[in-house]
Image (spheres, rainbow, N blue to C red):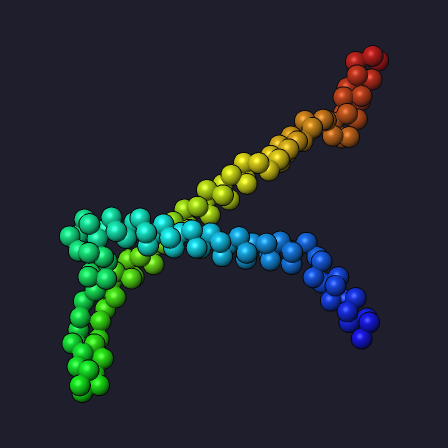
Length: 137
């Protein structure tokens, strides 16, 4: 049992697991911020543009409900869907900016060194030596 506890501790303390846990917590907090941005700022602006009290008025009722008969209304939630799309786009934009910023902070890779200019081959050097010896005779 002690060995399992030690292995579990080593697993939890790995950098990747801790980083993932931090990312989940920050992601949840960021999700709350974007949900508030969409629900409290963007959605009312869209409702104002469309002349409705809220984006729920953008929903389309396919079948009216009847409480006496126990029939629930059938509604296409376009307003909710638009809010979810806006929320996704905001999160995607912020993640794009964060990743782009992180990539700028990383050390640029050293440019690949150009290979040294190829010198003459052994055969060429031997040929030059032969020619020089012929000239000296």
